[in-house]
Image 1 (cartoon, helix red, strand yellow):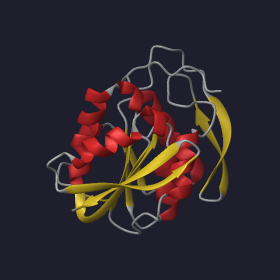
Image 2: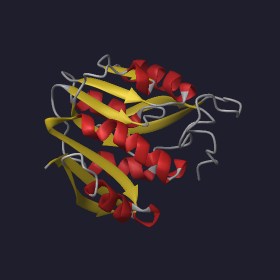
Image 3: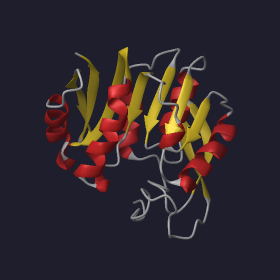
Amino acid sequence: MSEPTDHYFTAEPATPEERRSIEVTLDGRRLTLTTARGVYSPDRLDPGTAVLLAGAPDPSPTGDLLDIGCGWGPISLTLALRSPRARVWGVDVNRRALDLARANAVAAGVGNVTFCEPDDVPQDVRFATIWSNPPIHVGKPALHALLEQWLPRLADDGVAHLVVQKHLGSDSLQKWLNARDWGLDCTRLSSAKAFRILEVRRA
């Protein structure tokens, strides 16, 4: 089991870093990547993330792609591997996670991904693909503010896929998204291993 991750959504985690190497398979490639304490799921590829990577349709081959709450980078790296001609943005508030993700991009041999804090993404960028295992444990107000910041920035033909545990409010999140005045529709794409993949696109 992963250790408690009380501080993974803070800018500067209080726990000692204690970097470690783990083996993961992303886009069919076996990689040795680096994680640490104080970031989300430091011991393994999170099960929800695995469901998203296995179940989401292929990302746009070009344009700007976004991973909300990138952590040590598995979703962003998969986007970059699958869409080498696209520009991938991995955003997180956790600076330790961003440092790890940058190192992992080098280890994975991808150069088309930028890991940064949310305010560093230019305001005029619109996203052809958004993938996220959103940080449900930050609480509903913070989670809703996070999604409100990014989902309206979908391109006209853009599509977002979010993975959420059933018992952690996937159905209520779907209803909340459909009640927003963003011109977006949220539907359930699939369910697997106690997770749902929600799909968001322009109405």
